[in-house]
Length: 230
Image (cartoon, rainbow, N blue to C red; front, side, top):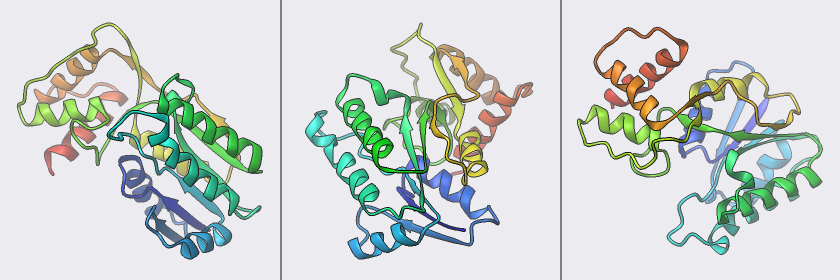
């Protein structure tokens, strides 16, 4: 099968790229980004069996709808040039329905896909932890892991709320297992609901080399070890 991936340089995209490279069913993997020439992108859109879209502006200098609109424009370009026989996988977010500039534009992207693509899967990705994250960027959980390893101070501004959390490795496994399926909207995952204090407590157990007695702790230790070895 021929798979094309846009956004392969980002946090989620790098993890998906690695999972696809280890999948024997993927015969050709095209890696493209926003700077790919228009002709080359159109070629990928017309020849791919599956097109995975996880490219997005997430932290513009000014948090406004206008600054997130390039996300919609890119999604529209992909959809408008997608072969009818190509499946589209769109990595979205649980914040797609939020009353924020990002959420408003993300909802607009999803609606355009639903109205114009025959076979698609939209993933409402929950909170995650995993390799290739940037500290102090857009993922507090990866930032905590990195800061614990570097013995930096930890600042907690939210004590009460629970966050639905999943290992990005588990998510990418799910994506690869369902490459050929048109699942439409996926918003249920095997998440673990944790407060930030809960997460830090579990992270502290790993930092002190306590036994990992659950699947969640095993996944967390794998990610902890990945960052420690960088």
